[in-house]
Length: 146
Length: 119
Figure 1 (cartoon, rainbow over the protein chains, first blue to last red):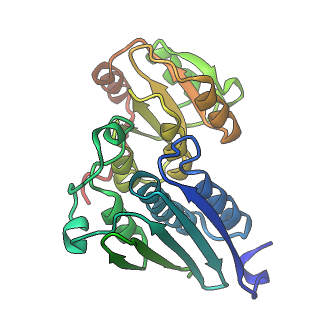
Figure 2: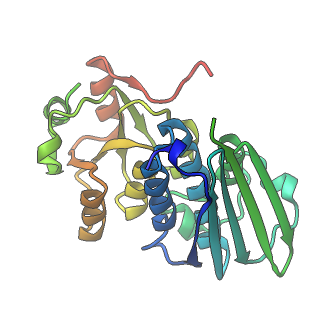
């Protein structure tokens, strides 16, 4: 199916389990395939995949569990993460490049360099973060299909 | 530069992707930080040189459109990582060289960074 052939929204969701690094990235990888099969341009697919992958990793690293929802229409990709995590006390601080609260064992796997949220911001057209300490975080990524 | 030429230069064993030896590589990135790769790499038929061998490296390569991974210092990925790379059609090479030497050799043969350093 090509971009101009789908007019109705395509949507779905993935359940994410905190700490499960064997499956970490699988949801983003599958969404990338879905977007590619829709005929969306490779540059937009790559941006969506990177932003989504970072969001997925944040849930895996920081939360007990979460859900990733996606919705694709002819002009917009929307991905929403809702997690049961510790929440972000200072969102501005979390947006700084290099700032990370990830534990050492996560860093040893190549993550936790403090580039996750900056990466999401770089690749998304819009990024919205809503967080309550002790309850969880909701992150919404919007990418326009030109 | 074809993957088979890169394997020769790095004295590397191709442990996965014998059928992609003729795939062209245009740029190289080298990092053990996954988010740096996602942040700085550009989409130009890239090769990744890394010292990490877990499946996260393959996931990152898949997301960032990286075509092949070189593991340095003879480090070998486990079978789950290899299986994932096979599913995602990413070639895997193992080189005895250090990251520094591997990068230096490929640079001297004309390959350049996948990072846009003038950004």
